[in-house]
Image 1 (cartoon, helix red, strand yellow):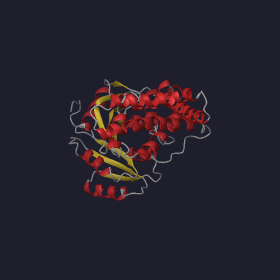
Image 2 (cartoon, one colour; image 1 turned 30 degrees about the vertical axis):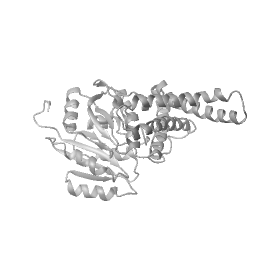
Image 3 (tube, rainbow, N blue to C red; image 1 turned 90 degrees about the vertical axis):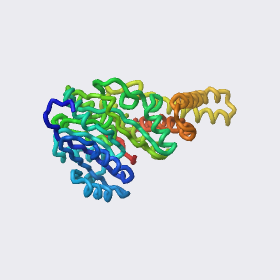
Image 4 (spheres, rainbow, N blue to C red; image 1 turned 135 degrees about the vertical axis):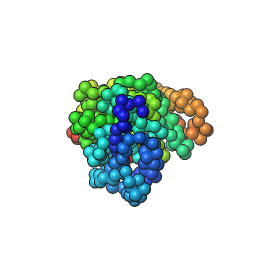
Length: 342
């Protein structure tokens, strides 16, 4: 295993789920298929669900004695994560989620990198994979710099210190030192936790070999909701930590404003036969051409039904994120935006 220890240390894998009946079994089965040599348990925080997640969790607990189910009455992600890791037995804590599929050898490598680097958090890449055409289009957009940016955990890069990583693996003492996940953040709690770890002088380490399969949203409506809420929470994060603001985070809101104002003004101008109509429409037209061009570049190797859906997926991610970010500017008096579902 590459560790200096004679015996592999105990590991607790933790996750929180709600309405994950379709994916939960696959996620849990992948964990227990790891062939890890040390003690291993899975702690699952179960939120109130409208599908069969509770019965699926109970069935999996009967099948896998090392699966522990704890209650998460609020159903909120940060509270569930805290309940799960604080209920865990072991000091090495590996986060997964209900959409994640661990590759073989993941736990062994995570433990090895934690011990070799001394990092407080080790993680790798989100590897989006879809089955239906729209889900495959979302997956390709998520792994493209034209989709949601060029963060290493989306597009890859060299191993080393990072601002954030996908999922993550922790030492209990480091999580306890910073108070765990901030329960004020319904979303972006992983990024916020890593920010506090780094500010506390601890190391967050990215390893591109730690790629975890992620199942994106299957429908346009679900994708729209996801990115709208993500944009709102990113604005709240920047408000709380102003030093995290960057031009990259302003690109989507700027595009949303330009497309919205330009589109409305251009259409009104056309109705009124105004000479400014073509000028107003230039921004949304140029944006659309940019998305189409980026989709052509990013679509190599995709089948035709997926290629046709890629521009819609990419534009939805940009404009929904931007709209959520702009909406959050109207919520300055709140501790955070009200999450309206995933």
